Image (cartoon, rainbow, N blue to C red):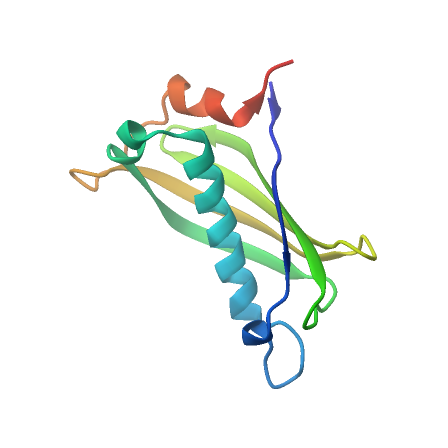
Length: 134
């Protein structure tokens, strides 16, 4: 089974720029969380989303090249692997014009029961939503 890459495109807004005139590090973290949410919502229905919720256990982020106002960016995310209640998600932010990787990240997520907020094992039903059919 191969992970399916989920992708989005956007232009860096002025609000993302810090006093050094490039995208602020905290903004990258927000984009990483936003794309994970979009990916989850694109693959699940209300029943699943009303049953489960994800929480972050940790983030590992590498900043390779700066991004600036009006840069066109591509953001990609995929599930690398999962085991039990944990899922490792990777994210890559790429400058669409230069094709340089701006930022890469690895995030460990934990699936919770939305009702009890206790860890919930990742089911086959959920895991198969995020792989390519080959």
